[in-house]
Length: 221
Ligand code: GTP
Ligand code: MG
View 1 (cartoon, rainbow, N blue to C red):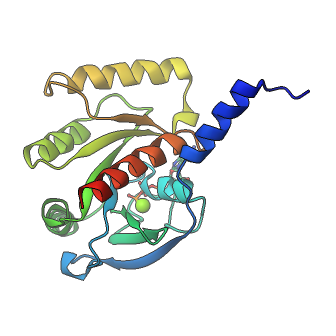
View 2: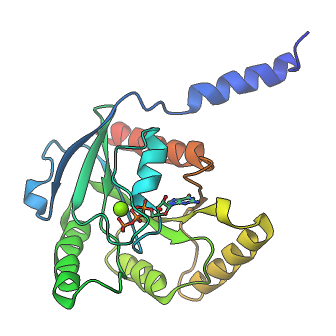
View 3: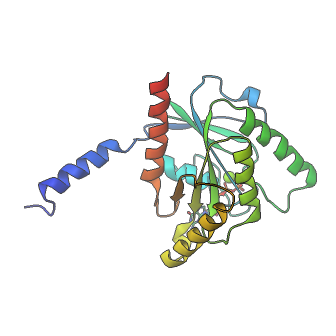
């Protein structure tokens, strides 16, 4: 006799079937020019947020490959638009962070230009994951960025990162503060995810979300 009842076992089989498998994940191209991004029309999911929030680490966590996207303890590591092809079907896109105090004004202006162009003009971009450090109080720069996405009608979801670094009660408190702050500007909240690249918490939910969007796109075409 095993630990599981047959009902539980069936449920586990169903859940396993539902989880999207990452069969292949590889780097394709880095650039600052959207005309040089891949032209095959496959859907893409971009990761954005303050420098050091954990964008590159999250891409590695989702793909189970610690070396795919370059990460660093120092902010400002990712400088370009980086495309990674997944299962030969869709892209994860790693972007440079915003709000890096040490970058020069010219650098920041450049960031604005090519990222704004990427976010507003790239037709293949189906969802932006806005990463937010779960340890912090709501930050003006993140709220402003999400408002800007709203104005430009860029679909986004909120992803709280590094949840391994705080207690679950503090996490709940911080999430509640964020939601309250967002609801001052928005009628409803976008999808909200909590993640840890250390413990891999949140991996299944995020991958399932991507899978649902991919399926919806396939059905439309
Ligand atoms: P830029 O490319 O500079 O904009 O940064 P980024 O947002 O890509 O952050 P990156 O993934 O390079 O991670 C920054 C630092 O945070 C690294 O030292 C990571 O190891 C650490 N880090 C990222 N995610 C997590 C997490 O979920 N938990 C913990 N404990 N550390 C994390
Ligand atoms: Mg990075």
